[in-house]
Image 1 (tube, helix red, strand yellow):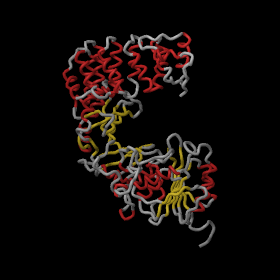
Image 2 (tube, rainbow, N blue to C red; image 1 turned 180 degrees about the vertical axis):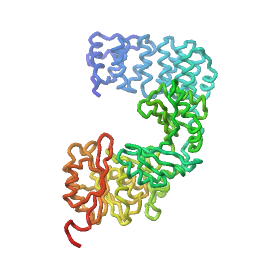
Image 3 (spheres, rainbow, N blue to C red; image 1 turned 90 degrees about the vertical axis):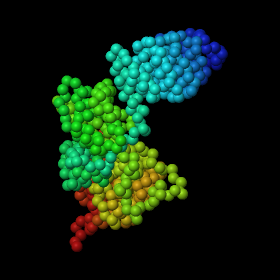
Image 4 (cartoon, rainbow, N blue to C red; image 1 turned 135 degrees about the vertical axis):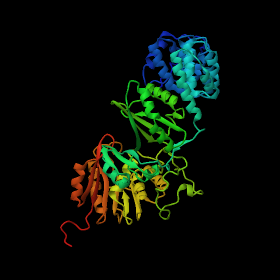
Amino acid sequence: MATRPTDPAKPATERRDSAAPELAPERRQQLAQAVADAGFTPGRHDLRDVVELLGDDEDLAVHVERALLRAGAAAAPALLRRLPGAEPPLRPRLVRVLGRLPADPAVDMALKTCLDDHDPKTRRNAIGALGKRGGPDVAAALLARARAEASLPHLRSLVEALGKVGDADALAWLDGLESDDPELQRLTARARLMLGRSLGRGEVGSAIDLDAVAAGPRPLVLGCRPGLEPLLVDALGPGFAPRILGPGRVAATLRGPLRDLLAVRLWTEVGLPLPPLSRGTDLPATIAAVLTGPEARLLFKTYTKGQVRYRLAWARGGHRRALVWQVAAAAAAQWPELVNDPRETTWEVVVDDAGLLVRAELRPRRWSATDKPGEGLTAPAADREPSPAERPSESVDDKPALESADPRFAYRSGDVPAASHPTIAAALARLAEVRPDDVVWDPFVGSGLELCERGLLGPAASLLGTDLDPRALAVAAANLRNAGLRAELTQADATTHRPTGVTLIVTNPPMGRRVHRGDVGPLLTAFVANAAAVLAPGGRLAWISPLPRVTDPALQAAGLVLRGSLTLDMGGFTGQLQRWDKPLRPPGRRR
């Protein structure tokens, strides 16, 4: 951000007291023009004068507030110095800006003091700011103000704030609050829901029970990247009785525990559909009835360890916050043990209310904390390198940092731009097939997910990876170690590097969008020629081509034969998921 220095001819601004500084017209005009510029950040010599402009008309005050927020914590001293002698409209605006600055004990103390301010708007701004900031003693200060508050609008604001940052005392006060005002009743019910769920976090555990088995077969709907449906059906096998419903949707039947699904690495979502209900005239009540009906209660209780915590999502997109709160209140009235908690949720309930029927799916989000992520999915102990946890004497800085509720891919401790989604990497590994004597090479290794998924799918003689970016190699090495796999990683060019004995190339090359921007055709054709030369007779190439019209003729000219191809949704564009084989003998050569 640009910072314009104060005119050195006007040093008196720094000696001005905080009561009511008077700006010269030229200085006021200069600063008014400056704050309107989105690139202007006031320096320490300008802050006092800029703060004074907060008392001008509302349009200018909006620009001033943004400029002060760009200054961040540096603006706090000037704002705090001006607050004691300020009068409206400057006073409430000062509090509003202070409430949006980073955490600071002096700012928090000033805001708490303003809870008893003589100006109603200043009090209200302080209440709203503290409700968002939280911090030590904030709940007690808000509760003390609420008990003494006579203004209905301010009481509403206090109830909202206590719902966000209150404590057990605040919840007890909310439980006993009585009012004839419908809006205050609504806000109180919402605050009690919010506070109840936040106070319950950590006290009652909540996780998906992977080992629970329902009394009978359960219908499932599995989501995947559009294009992977045939591979997902094949991976599920006849035991799940899978069938394709449409793009990215596969129906199946669960007869055992949810843990059985963790061996299938191509799905992105697991949904347990609930019986639909007629939409009716009261939509919140209908959705709540779906959530608390006999089938939903059975599924929640069967597959949840501890408290049932859920969040609502909408199949057609959007937030619809007002409807969420209405549904949460109606559901809590019918089943108090069901807790709406969008932050620490165990289940996502995806609702589709576009038609005459209201439909919903329960999707697991918080897997059991007692399960070791990826347990049972790594290579045999004899074939894998000890994990960092098994090498206590070794200092490592690559422990998992990516939050993931999916234990199948818990080995991911790092990522790089344009890296594969792990389900796509798993699809490439499955398309390539498993041969125990494979020497596997990923020429564009990136974060190493293709090598990880191929290694976890079955044994291989060796895993090789190359990349031009040393940072990518470091991320790939960490992910492979986390997966319990050995690999040889080298900084090299995929178009010229020629490792020996390679029987399988599995890779997701640059697509020309996030890395290697522009025309990737020359890069891919050069890589194809090199790959065909590197592969041993009978070898395979499993990859994704963003330009099949360019790469297919090059692969055919290099002597490879197409064995399978799927059009895959890559998120905004399509790629061709392909398997090419190198014949054991050149075409036309007789046995």
